[in-house]
Image (cartoon, rainbow, N blue to C red; front, side):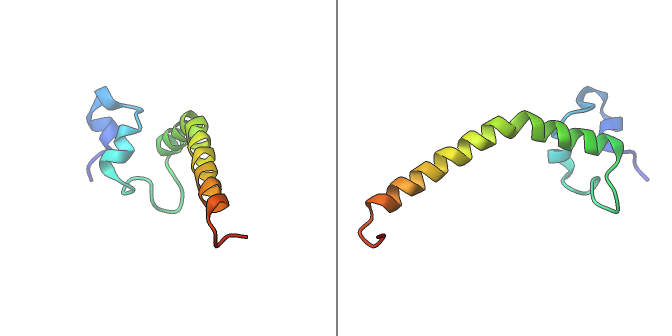
Length: 73
């Protein structure tokens, strides 16, 4: 059995690139490994602000389009 990618390439150790590179192959199963859990949580924390800004922008654009549409009361 091959070791996980972050053990094969020390330059990328602890990066989210590992998850993108390998897909879900190393994080599926009954429970996540310690490293996978850390990487997922870190990625969610770092991108939360950006994701919420994007959601707000998209919701506002949709609301403005619907507000100006004649079929919407």
